[in-house]
Length: 133
Image 1: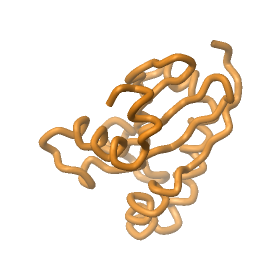
Image 2 (image 1 turned 135 degrees about the vertical axis):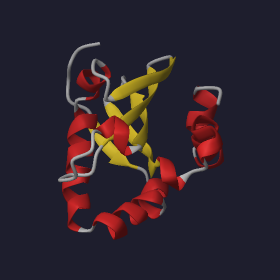
Image 3 (image 1 turned 180 degrees about the horizontal axis):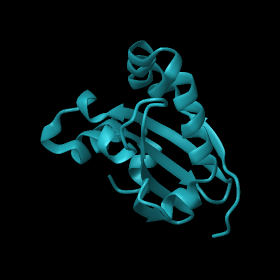
């Protein structure tokens, strides 16, 4: 896979749910944070070469990934911040769909991975079936 720029789409579900929490909590810092997330997703292949993103699964020409991010202007590392994005990457169309944007505090700590998988199953049946979630 070559290093090229991806189109980034914030899914409506994530806009309506978790992003609203970030907007209220961080106000003006959220706009810059969102711009940073978009930039990282546009260059997702580079992010996957670092510790900022983890490849979760591959199916056909699609990848599922988790991206750590920090709030702009707050001196906490992306990993330590507990802020995550779940991404569906379409390598045929060069699109990154941002399915979820959440803080570890937004979902039960008992089993973070199972929780976001359940959310994906409930709201993104196309992604859930593609990756057998």
